[in-house]
Amino acid sequence: MVIDHAWRGLGPGLESLSGPGGAPLTRTVKLIVLPLIVRPALRPELAVDFLGPDQAARLDGLIRESGARLAATAQWYTLLKRARRTLGIVAGSPQDLYFQRCFELATTYGAPAADAEARARAVVEEVAETADGRTVEALKGYLADAARRTRLEGELAAAWESRSPAPAAEATAAVVRAAEVLEACGTPDRSGDSAEYASMVEAGHGGLFGRALWGQAGGVWGGEDLPASLGLTARQVPPRPEIGQGASTATLPAPLDRTLFERLFTVLQSSARREELPTVPELVGREAGRGCAPLGLHDESLRVALVLGGRLAVGLDPLGTGAPAAGRTAAHRAVNSRWRREASVLRARRMTVSPHPDPDGGALEALAQDLRAPWAAYMRRLWVRLHGRDVRDAPLEDLASAWAVLDGVARSVMMDHRARVRSALRALSAPPARAAEQRST
Figure 1: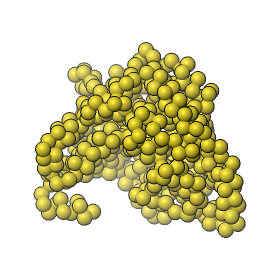
Figure 2 (figure 1 turned 90 degrees about the vertical axis):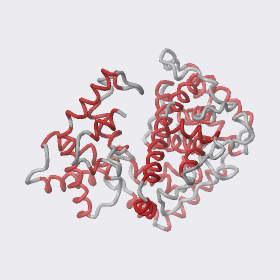
Figure 3 (figure 1 turned 180 degrees about the horizontal axis):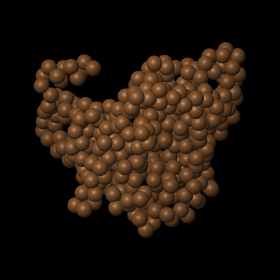
Figure 4 (figure 1 turned 45 degrees about the horizontal axis):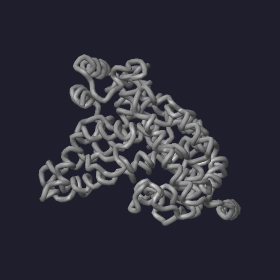
């Protein structure tokens, strides 16, 4: 709220960094405001959910002091996007690739001057060259070779046939251990206690859980109505990954149902620093093995983190309905208490007990339904986050780092839901002609 209020107070000139309602884009907050202006690592008193008057005033002041630099950042971003179009570059998200570079340009040079277009073109070319072929286009070209696809098909078939499913009891045991580990999360004095977490990794509980999914495990979460995969696959068991040749962010299937192309497409599209990725041939070769590994991940610490996330996800209870699995561990209490304070959640909770739950025509009821079963969105986002770490060979060494990811995904899902509620409310409150226009676009 403080960031939103301060941002709107900066006035015009920030349109390219803002949403339709004038608030900063989620990417603006994530890539510019928090890491480059607030800098919570240096100001831990601002890295909390609720700010006191002094902290709120400090945060407000930091953003307002950066007004001129943010306006220049917006101008540079417009120039970089224009240069990108001129050069015919389509790979990657412009916000991910250029937001922080634009803030750097604004800090170094101020508002764009006479040489700005040449400088913007140079930055765009530098970013494209840094990717060094690590693009969706390069991936598509690599997988277009018929002989290469035949070889990959053979490798996938052999790897899939060599799997060894585990009994459902192994999955149940992993879930029980996960609950014990989550009890050490969510409280400052215990978040660094990694003994149970390390024990799960050493015992291979993540891999055992993934192998149990191949054997059609059921009822492992304490409820027959919950699929063991928690939405990671729409099938009864995860299918053998296909190679694929195209992808769209709007139609991506469940994580374990994706083709090799779709899995690597998300990595290449979301990577701001693609120079840190392996080359496309390496990416494809490793993904072929990873796709046939338990839970679609190579690293055991990441598999364990996914099991921990599943145990956390089935206990997410934003509406406070008292679901059987909810609130059993310190981690659940920490996440659920934060979520239940959201204004959109409070409204959704009222809608669930109202005899006329959706007076607004369906939009908010659909969002309320998301809060009744939040585990699917959580697991989908968590898997993508862990898959990205696996591609970069970035394991989670201890419980503190694992909890940072688990809690971060919960915050991300909550913020995404908040943004969708705001968008729905804007559409509902718009004049009829404008609302129709928004629906058509």
